[in-house]
Image (cartoon, rainbow, N blue to C red; front, side, top):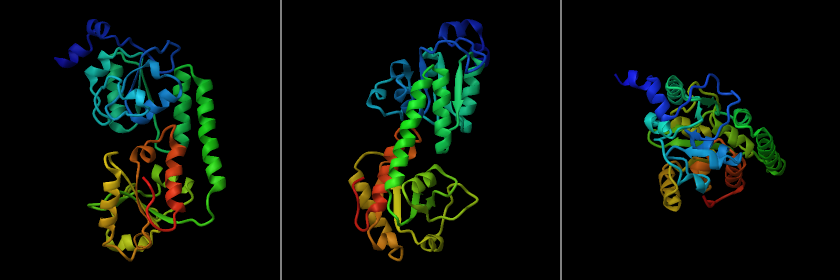
Length: 289
């Protein structure tokens, strides 16, 4: 019954999703829905903030995005809310849940652009794709150039030593970022090396023996929320005291960092890399999150 209603041409007309055959059609894009925080940041960085009519609940940057109507969460976008926003374009990521969601939107006539952003080079490609579809290619080229330039400047200035970094995704059970992750790219761009060797799993769980064997010089924990980072820093230091054999613990180089900056692959990439680089440059003691 519901499927029949959704595919009804009458309701499609009422809800406002006009059928589009391809995401790169030359139709004007006046109303955009973003289904991920980093996509929202890209759209605003391209000067399209006024055209963004709805975002997911976790889209909180730039500050202008906070007051935009919400269409569910990053993991569970709301189909009816997206359609009700009457978008000319819905921008989604390519991981399975959102890719499937985009297919559902296309079935009811919504024009979608799905991009893959798991690594830095894919970020540049996604910015180009979004720029092409929204007729902001010049701004996209400039944005990519700015990000590349900022990263190049930091790499030229980074320290000679290359500390081993353990990037902690969760503590219990302990799970870390492997070498096939965006986190690994940030570590390398910041002048470090991942203390985890190649693994089958992208974010492998590790036991105590494996943990000690990493010999991590620095431990990084991206904060899940921005609430009370000082308390989260204290909690992390207290937790890691049980592993005094780790150089990072011995030297007081355990850091809780802003999760938004280092977990969203978007226009603020260089800012996130700089946060990590500042941690790696500290010899002892904690840095400000």
